[in-house]
Length: 114
Image (cartoon, rainbow, N blue to C red):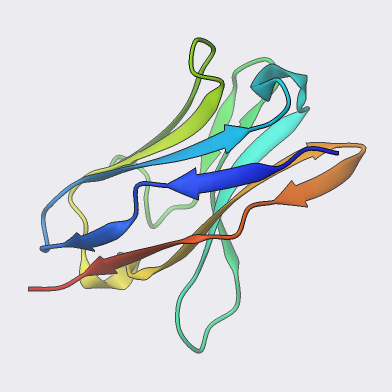
């Protein structure tokens, strides 16, 4: 059973950047799809970005051009580079991976505030 652990969250000023990482106990490339979700206070969890086994990616319109999802074979991590952050990006960010079943991390907090 895979375990996913996120890291990299924190407090950043508007316009700043953060890089989230998701480390897996299983080979990152063994998942058919991996994704980043986020849940802001009082809102439902939403899909931010996803990356498929072949490397294709998808992004929510709200983050296109600002966020980049990637996988690192050497570190066995999935990453989310977040640039030009706004207060609307404040949320708990979760990574997920699917291979037969969907696995979730525990989440990492991102706060964008001056």
